[in-house]
Length: 83
Figure 1 (cartoon, rainbow, N blue to C red):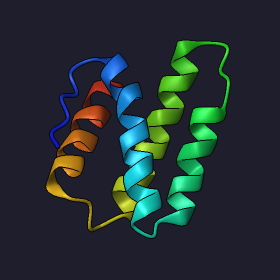
Figure 2: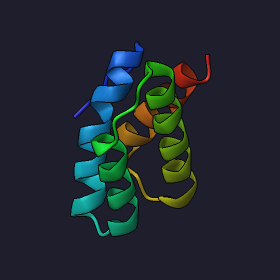
Figure 3: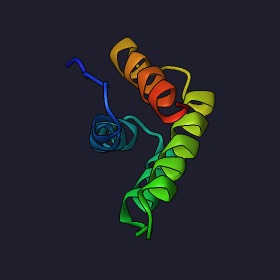
Figure 4: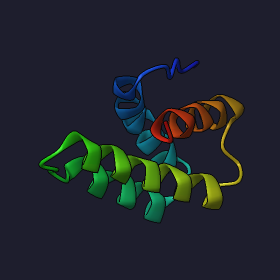
């Protein structure tokens, strides 16, 4: 599966397959953090995007065996969120 991460909307959509991967491959804590993020309500889009940026950065730093397509999508998402 390939992920096309080009917009902030794509970043938000990527959270679900990333959560699925984490929960199915033994990363319970990281999956729990993603679920908490998705379930949170933010009054402004900027807060939601910042929360995704922080969660994605933590996952990149702690999950070292992500498949290359997830790793590339995570890098693209972080690049978009840093703009």
